[in-house]
Image 1 (cartoon, one colour):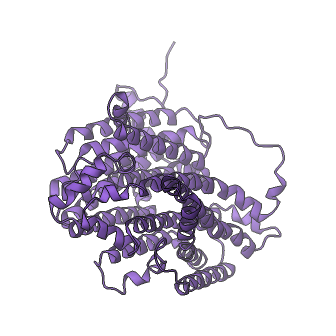
Image 2 (cartoon, helix red, strand yellow):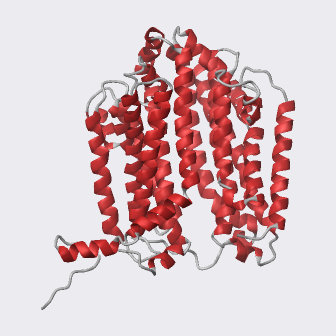
Image 3 (spheres, helix red, strand yellow):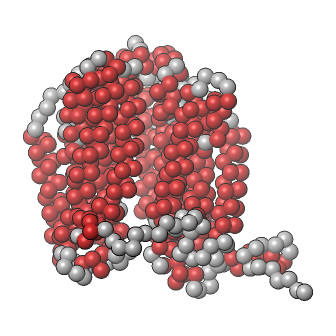
Length: 553
């Protein structure tokens, strides 16, 4: 009996090598296409991380110019479990590079992971769900070429991130080799999650489920790293070695540089990528390996109108953001009571919080600063909610809805409502959680909850402006709706740079965040908030008007 090798399995001989080449046929062309399609996204992510890295070094040098001025902060941070859980080990905070990149060690790595996830999902499950992959693979394209192209696109993007972020740190005055090592650490985390996304794309039956799986793994990685970094010894302290984020912090670019740590994410990426390729040959196009629960035989009455459908589509992100914001508010509320110990006698660190949060006492300045930071998260959600309109339109799911008795404005408003109401929910959660925890620590629960709730709600007009920008782009130039992310990154950068006097005064005034009252403790002025609401309304109405008069994608 003659046995014929399956084309899905690559052997060691010439026949196996030929089968492997057939499986990867068209990878180069698909990689070029992926880079072209995602060039704006890639540049935006790289610009955001590199800009914040540069700004962080410039601000840190101004506030703590000497090692002696940084030592008190290092001593306090090394013994504070909240800061260790949030930002990682504090062993290198006596160095300029260590202190400047401390927060970015965790959140920069998470940014690289998210960038990689979106890139791989877009070229695998995203195109598969939209029906484009079936057309592509009908030609001279191998079964595993799209997965390979997605991973290669992520690899090129992460190498670009490593290079640009490293150069940004070097240009700001840090040593070149540690700066590039820091960039490679972020890229290593990004590629680890690119491989994880490749596996999730084979397991899940759709892009949204795959994204949920990857985000869950990112959360697990954060928790493992946080538990390992806060443990005082024993096996718990080794948990950070199970986390890709923990590998980035263990690299210690500005301490005793541990180059050998990079071997771990490289081997992990290779192994998990191999698993993704193996799984890719075991499923049919348009399906996933995980079982799918069948839906109800009849649709819910709530889906009879556009708002019910919008709630069905938007509820997942809103609930996920709510849970994340609640957790963040609890942590930061607990941290507020110990901010005095963290800062210690360092006048420069006190100046930093005052510049970010206002001249109203150290704790109030810290609380105002973290609420402004949470407002950025709420803005991200608002833009994401508006961009759902573009996703539905480009996926040709808007046409069947609009072909019935639903008008364009009614359909658009059903999603814009979540961009308006959703941030209210998120900021209320942030204000209440942080206020309750901080109030419980100082014995004033009702008073602090009310103050933090007010601090959260004054951020809303600035958040709505970004929803208006996204709505205007969607209605006027739908192909460039994603440019709303660039506007958000630009305005956040202008606000941060303006806080430390690194720009001309008129430049930070362009950002909506600059005009938000610094509460608690600051002076409340309603005039700038009224103007921001008016600007948001004008942008949204202009976007709706433009959408009403243009053709669908």
